[in-house]
Image (cartoon, rainbow, N blue to C red; front, side, top):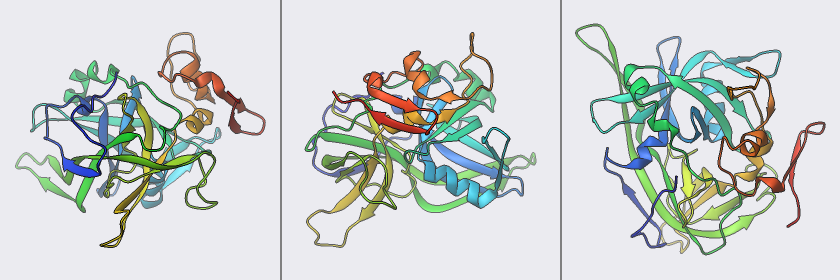
Length: 305
C-alpha cells in the first residue's frame, strides 16, 4: 500500500486530521498502557507493517517499561508488568478497535521497536481484515531537499481520564489529536548524528513534530514509509530554521532479533533476525538484499552498491 500525499507542498506545515474516514487509520494506531494498579498512560504512535505486526519508537516502549515495570525471560524477551494496547480509530467515532500487544522486541541498532498484536475487543475482531493493509518500506533515507510527511497522535494535555459508567464499565478518555506534518529533508546522518542521543542512522527534517507523535510514520514523495519520528525540538521565535525533527532510518531495524509468530512452517516462539521478514516477503522492504546481519557480533551493516 502507498499513502497518497497529493496536494501537499514541502513548505513546513502541520494540521489536525479529520477524526475518521482516512485510510491512514487502517495503519497508524495510538499506544496506551493499562497498569495493574488501574493507572493508564497514552504515549506515542505505531504503524502496522505486516498483518498483526507494527513498529514504533523504542524510547516510547522504554518509557512505558520504566513507568510500569517489566521482566525479561530466559530468551531475553521483554515481559511487561502491564497491558499495552494499540488503539485504532474507526469510521464510527464512538467505536475504537483495541489491540493487545502480545510481543515486544527492541532493536539495539536504532530507536525502533517491533510489536505483535491481537484483537482485544469485538471491534478489533471485526477489523482484523483491515490491518492486512501494509505499506511499502523505503528502508534508505530520502534525498536532501525531498518532501516528506509525518503522522502521529499529538497529545494535547498529556493526561488521560477514566470514567466509570452506570454499568460499572471503565471508559478511558484520551486527549490527543491525529496530526499530519509536512516538510523537507534537511540533512542525512548515514551512521549517527552524535554518540549519545541520536547514535543511529537518521535524518533531519523541518516539519513540526509534537508530543505523542514519536514512533509515527514518515512517508516519502512516493507514499512509501521511509522512517519513524524519533526526536523533535521547537526552536525559539525568530530562528530561521523554525522546527527540527529527526527521523530514524529503517534499514538498521532489520538487524533486530525478534520472535514474531510467522505461522506456516515456522516454529512458534523461535528467535530470528527481522531481516527474515523481508526475505520471506512478510514485510515489503525493497533493497533488503543490501543488509548484512552478523549473528555472532549482533551487528547490521550495508553492502556497498
